[in-house]
Image (cartoon, rainbow, N blue to C red; front, side):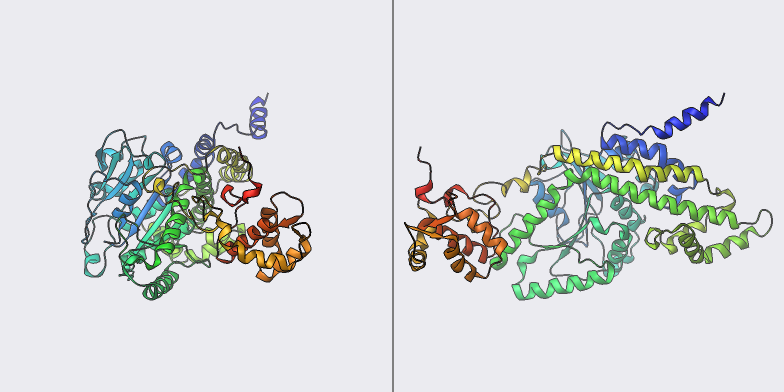
Length: 534
């Protein structure tokens, strides 16, 4: 008797067992979050239901910008290969959304075929209709970069008179759909035209809840001199600050992202460093993909909970027989007050609530009588997921990350700067003299020897106390000088001979020039007398 009660209790006590993070996310979504979304018509208001492909797909990078800012050229630069359907020019050439993905053969899959493919994460885009699907396709090609990431090219955002021409579909809503599912959003700006059009401003605002994914690229920066570049950078930050309302300063990468010679090469080192930073950011995406999906599921669950409270509150306020239409208008107009009431009753942060204006627009077409009352059991399942299941998945995320290589994205532009003389920082700082036969410290050793012999060496060595008096003159912090001492004291006897002293001064010079110190002394910096001769 009551055996079903025992089973239910056991099911609650026994934690879910997941094989992988992806498997866990799928099961948690379908078993615990999806029932809440369906009950309160979440998909009609916010975002379509997630599918298996949304959890299995490779990390995606979304490129957004006004026309002729170099979006398509940026993709061409990354993969070092033309892709099917690619068009580049100063006029608005890309008039479609193009998903650049890996495939065994070159080819283009049109939008209508793409949204019925269960293996692709685009099935829910069919809601935007034929006007959009005719402007959406997938360019497939065999490319090593695309084995790890996919890139979404978007139509150039229009400015001036052009933005009044209707696209035939809700452009901002499509970009919002992509923003929710991609791992990185790159906003491209041209150093020559920083004006942010109304449409571009609307698009950035549509990505309001995804600021953590946004990076900004100031492209074509090699076409202006340093002084102008500083002014352009300042103007860009000011413009973005008015639209992206976050206390943190958004990360801007400055450079010229194509394979042509720099027009003005005076900022070459800056552009190289910025490109390496951006490449590292993109290369980290496969490692962080599971964490990003987990984070997005948590965000979705929080929004679904708030949505359930809003819908059930509206249902509760509706009359059972007369005056339904008037009451509906009254509730829509006083939605802000309902938000505040829910916020107080359930201790929910204001940032978790959906846009008031958008919610009011959606509610205009809804039949409030079909809304569901509050179902505590559904909310309890989501709370259990957030409190217990997500914590166990977080542990699995760290385990999976630890098993992955640091840089998974290979090929294309990523390959050219990894190794060899054109690698980042090659031959600079502690790497100076790496290819030389002579010991690089030897160039300045006569100057360092003069200082060494003023310190009254005993048996050819100076004590730590004597060396310290000289080294602190550099004004570097003790933590840095301690590391330099550890690197320079090659034989670990607590004293420095003339070669080790010269090496310590060389490392001080490296640090003062703004370079990082190595964790271990490179072979080419080991003093000649301390090298193992085979």
